[in-house]
Length: 144
Image 1: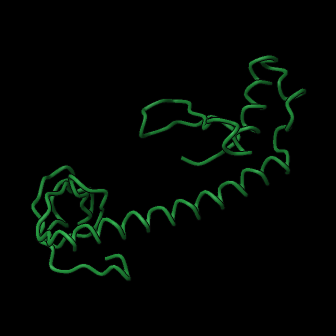
Image 2: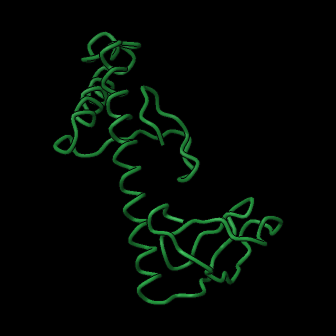
Image 3: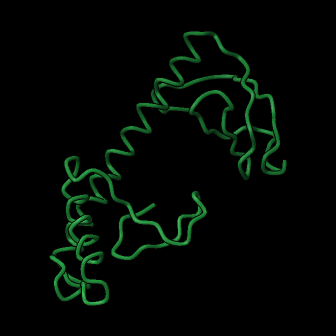
């Protein structure tokens, strides 16, 4: 899901229109979003005339862009940390096999851990297939 100025479909949730709005105490971008939503709720079709940010407002797009950049960086860091600690968990417990579900093109998702990885021999299996994967090595430096 990406931040934007129009409600768009959310494939994961299966809804036709979705907006990203959480507590305005957490992030400035959420406060801006709620200002816009309040203007739309109060003024309907004339909301664009009274909303804090007008359609195609450069400042609004700048706020969204700054949020997207920060969110992407934080998300990348979070994913790396999660992957590191998952690999560390596997190493410390001497795990040699995992059950996983095929996603696509040889990618599998571990059934009981937050881990997605390439598994040899799964390239031609249908999506959703359940497999047992043998772990032949872990690299905490490259997160493989």
